[in-house]
Each structure stands twice: as structure tokens, then as C-alpha cells.
Length: 212
Image (cartoon, rainbow, N blue to C red):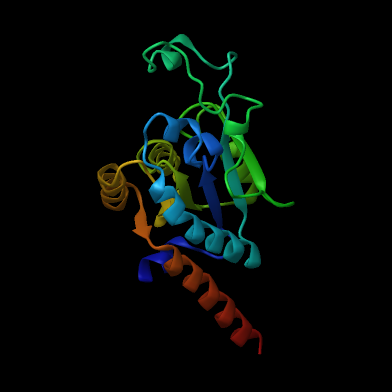
């Protein structure tokens, strides 16, 4: 909790939800169809919903990062990571690119991206600077790819990083755990969802007692 006191300053925090979309998360999405295990995503969703409810209740900005892939942004180098040079994941305008079990509400912010990191060629940094955000509470999929890429780039841009170990998921437990160790050692702090919720509740209680 002491480290959260340093990181989660009132009015300086935003929640980032990375790539919670059908192709990445749904049992009938592209990643599951390719043989990836999406069970960890099902396990983390209740924590994500609790976090979003708490964040909105405490006026913490919520930013949904949504990946779109299309011909206009599929460079030769980017497409080369697929054996046949074709990426059919989260194509613009498809069901696979739609959000999975989360719905941005009025007041929430959506940032579209075309690469692993939510900071590459997007408006995310501008949005955060406008909101005067200093700390990013990062959640989403997958822990070791888009979540970690976003966390690393956020840290390099001088944001404090709080990664929620039980509100992000990967298709491999080992890959998930390796990212948690990496982030906690070099790029920020790793905590559980309830730690952040409890901190916000404590802040609210302290503010109320000060007013009384």
C-alpha cells in the first residue's frame, strides 16, 4: 500500500484497458481458433469489471485501447510476422475487432492502435497529457505482448506504471508470470485489483473525514 501512495496520486491516474476484443478473448475468436488457451481471460474478467466500476465511481478516467488492422496500416514489415503475410485478427469493421464483455460508457475514452504498443502512432499520449495523468493502471490482453509493450513505452515516456496481475491475461501462464516479474523489477509495480480498489476507497474515506 505504501508504494501505491506514491503512485496513485489523486487526480493523476487513468485506467488503461488493452485489447479486450473478441478475436483476442472470445472462445470463438481468432486466437482461440488458432489453438490458444483463452481460459485465463475468462478468469480475469470479473476483476476487470470490478475495477471499471470502482474507477468510474471514483472519477478515474477509463481509456479503452482497441486494435484495428487493415491494409492501410499493414506495412510489409508488420505483415511479415505472419507466415503467409496475412493478418486476419481484429480487421476493421469485423466482429473480431469488437469489444469483449466490456462496453465503453459515455465519458470513457477509446484509443485505436495498429501495433502492439498503445503509444505507437496513436493519440494516447496526447490524451493523457491533456488529462494531466501521471500514473497508468494497466489491464487487458495479452500480458506479454500488447500489455507489456504499452507498459514499457509508458514508462519510457515518464508515466508511473501499475500493472494489475489479476486483471490482465495471456495465453501462457509462464509468459504471463515472466511479464509480471519484468514489470515489477524494471518498469513499475505489480499489484492485485483489490489493492487498487481498496486504495481508492481509503482515499475517498479520508477525504470525507477531512471535510467533516
